[in-house]
Length: 77
Image (tube, rainbow, N blue to C red; front, side, top):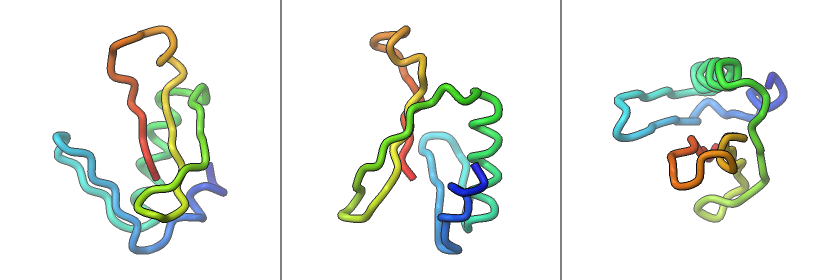
């Protein structure tokens, strides 16, 4: 996780509607990611993807295969 957090820039923003949360900057965004990954364990899959023409990381829960048709907490950074 520390290596991933170091990739975040000062203008990194996390917004997740409809949940009323907003994190700005690598430090706060990184703290959020550490908490989420810490609570949900290490069983997430991460893949290199693109978002708006820029390099990005996609993440999804390991429970996806076990809970078809249900929300899985996929994310993009």
